[in-house]
Length: 208
Ligand SMILES: C[S@@+](CC[C@H](N)C(=O)[O-])C[C@H]1O[C@@H](n2cnc3c(N)ncnc32)[C@H](O)[C@@H]1O
Image 1 (cartoon, rainbow, N blue to C red):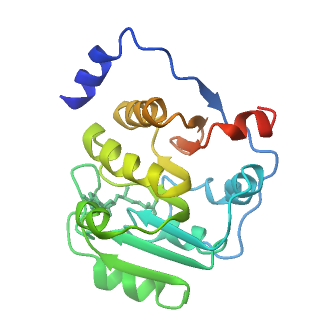
Image 2 (cartoon, rainbow, N blue to C red; image 1 turned 180 degrees about the vertical axis):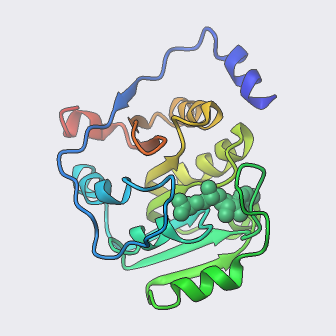
């Protein structure tokens, strides 16, 4: 419903440019989990994204951990990673059971990862920190991606959104956040799509 409202209300709004993201380098980070996941491929372009947009390496926040593939990949690049998830799945995930203990046990050896069992709505109501990077990969509805993503855009230099190619609602939400914040929307089309929002000044700075 919110998706269609956005489609209709933005019919005459200026188009938000979506710039294809073409990595210059790909390299598998030193720590990766080895089960098949839709995120596979993105771990190899994280260093490229960090370098291209001159992102700091201090702190990273992730909404949507599940079994931990993206969390472990991100932990190779930041001093600390906080992973927030209800750990009970959602209408788009195969898993619908409580996997907090299982995921905590799997990630226990990564000392710079802290897992928090929380709904993103409760987390954003009480967190005022600013992060080098936030990754949004929760339930892929327009409303949740928009709400979580807009907060993230105000609390990080760079925000990543998974599934921009497989879920039109996610791409639409990222487009609307870019329109509202004036951030630049890059889109990596592989691995089901990764939206990248960065401040617009980078467009000229990086000659894109
Ligand atoms: C697609 S999975 C994340 C996959 C993970 N990023 C990866 O690639 O390894 C989505 C996760 O979002 C979580 N989730 C869905 N809605 C949420 C909400 N409102 N707050 C917090 N987590 C949520 C689900 O429990 C699920 O584990």
